[in-house]
Image (cartoon, rainbow, N blue to C red; front, side):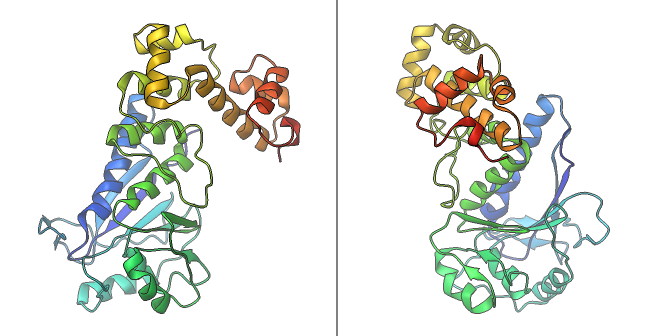
Length: 327
């Protein structure tokens, strides 16, 4: 079953850094585009809102016909509120529109899967001045860390982080890290394979936050621009349980098995079969964590038997045994 559509509200004040919101908005738009191409309904509905009907962005472009700040109290589906930064060494919120925004924010009732907050760069300061960060962890641009500590009483401010997830509050460190945060949230909601396709379309490197010590196999070995390798990786990621062989992968990429092997080694830094096995191990691990038995998880991931799964598990140096994975 598809997750419910999320209403994403980009809140804009005068001077809002355009890349803070345009980058994440494009990532969500592309995710919808991929979903529709796969025969699914859009996962995100984008809204551009503010305390004023018109606002000028950080680069001077005027954004008109903004929707008013919405009433989210009776929302029937998940709501994400995106707060973005402004140029300058300090966040100034002394204008009448800023006061109206803070008043609206103070009336929000944040809760996971209901009303969640996404703060990009110095947008975290807006949440701090609205009193929404108490008892939460958060980060912001390194130029604003001390300002955030002073403004956010009861908030644990974390430095040197790409982004911080502390539901229902998410925050990112700088302008482009809003895209990292959005890709992470797309992966959480729609899966790593689709997030990888979004990143490929945007031609950005997929990163995860420093709290994640290792890249998911769905995200690693994707920091290249070769269309044939990406095409094969997309196909395998979407259907890892298929009976993949190097010739079948080569057919998918419209090339020869030998040439595909060379392309994988040159651009992904791994052989096609080694990458396939990492993907299948990740799928099997996810199944085990959901309470599946070893044989069921092996079948889900495309292993021919639980014995093949166990062998791959130990070959890749994973801890313990497949049956030891937490339910």
